Image: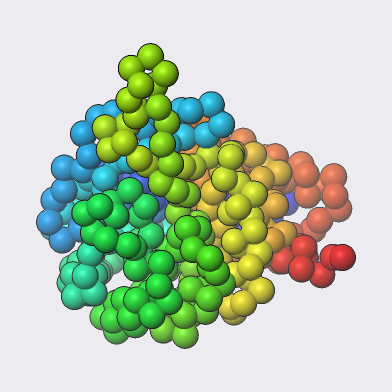
Length: 309
């Protein structure tokens, strides 16, 4: 079974992409994920200057999924350029594209960090305009407003030399309108969704919120139906490809994203539940299910949920 896909004209050996913020901190980790079977890898979102992020505890398995408030910790773009250059050299030999992710809290800073990050020669640049757990520091995310989403997209698109992916938030009333705005502003692809929330988990013994940041973004199996609906709505609205992200842990979950309209599928919390074997396991499960359903390839089934009553 051939699971290869084309994302903005760039070939991926399979549609499973390491989502940002999971293991994309060092070149060695990114290459290890690629060797484990990822079709592409995304680095952790980085900023112009280094950030310590939030204090521990930052991640919790609450039973139905995960909640995290990492706070966008990263070593800063200058350190990340060197790390991603080293990763790119090794990833190229494996045929696995590199997606570099960046964030900022002003349009000018988005432009500046994007320009610097292009020096690492990534295959794609992702702008993360949707993190839900730094609102107290940065204000509402760009992804909450179509005009601001479009403004940062067009400004960054003007300075990058590779396909631009815009990562959207589910925490809006009409994600399709945001998707249309960033497409009109020049986005080449959309990643949907970021974590949901923020949410909160309270320790019943101490009576205090468990996360040091008190609130965090919710991910994992509990948010998958929301992610599938967002991909479905976006696919019905735009012509650019969609990367479906949110609670995908099995081959069935990945195929559901494709049926909703995704070109590729982001893998994040599945690595917590299934380890690095998640990529090979999900891929094998996809192949078995496609054979069982007499599906011949992913192009044949992409978005067919829109054609069914």
